[in-house]
Length: 283
Image 1 (cartoon, rainbow, N blue to C red):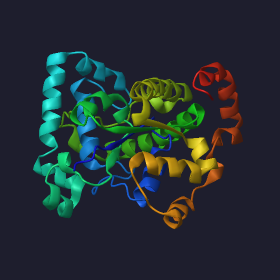
Image 2 (tube, rainbow, N blue to C red):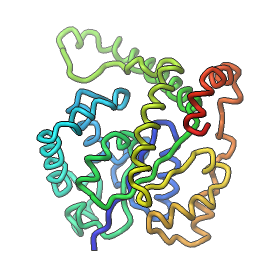
Image 3 (cartoon, helix red, strand yellow):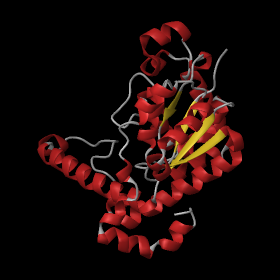
């Protein structure tokens, strides 16, 4: 009997990787080939492709509405996704052993899924491919998210700018279709915070529409009392790991990472500035 996937959504830098890692340790298969943020390469590439088809990206995700709102385009996109679920390329998600056994993601007979913040916007398409899909939405305080994005931008910009300098002799002869440098949207706290608001708005809408097929997880609550939440997550995902395995999975969680912004005066001041916007989301 085939099983529908568990699809993890939520804003970037919100703790989706932590929740995913814990669930993997407890038996939820989340992909064989993954990149550094625990995102299955197969689904991440498809999500990047979906947003690009609409002229968007993870920093401009709202463009996906150009696909969702055009019935003929949407139908062909879903048709392509259906085709990919049984293509040989799915081996990068399944690994050789599982691929030989099931061949297609439509025949998965164990608890499985994938994590990618882009799912927050591409979810309606994935739920056409997997109508019984279940969704976990992970949320985190918006100022912590904005600061994490700002730090990542600074690191990424510096690394890519240095590489661009080294490549200048080659770049004189090259016009590329891929970005050489990161977008500047998340360079500032306000830029990252507005992006967080976009993701929160979309994710909450999905959770409300899906009812019992969706579960919300607040990062701060997960850090403060992981055992209870993990019990609920296991039940939601169809996992039965046993108490010892569950305790081992949450043992290394660093509870002090919750509300990290409170340690920096600049971030405390920004949180005060946007307190009404935070309150809208329960923060």
